[in-house]
Image (cartoon, rainbow, N blue to C red; front, side, top):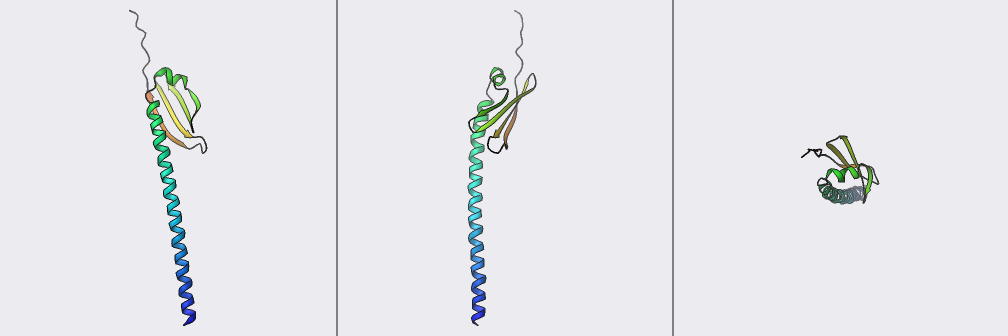
Length: 110
């Protein structure tokens, strides 16, 4: 009878420890998701501003540049198309990428 009670207590303690561990891991995962969401919102706000840049602004930012805690790369694969990529400087993980069309200025003689 005593042995059965000890075995039951060991099983109960193991189950309790497992539940506590799983709860702690779930809380950590929720914290990580919240941090990632905050980072994506900030990156999206920055990219919203980039999307308003003129051709001249985009040309000035061609190549790789540190923008706060991000690395931004602006490429121009064709004369009217810019591709902007935002990455995390610590992990080099790509956060956002967008393509921006900017027409060439026409030089019409009067």
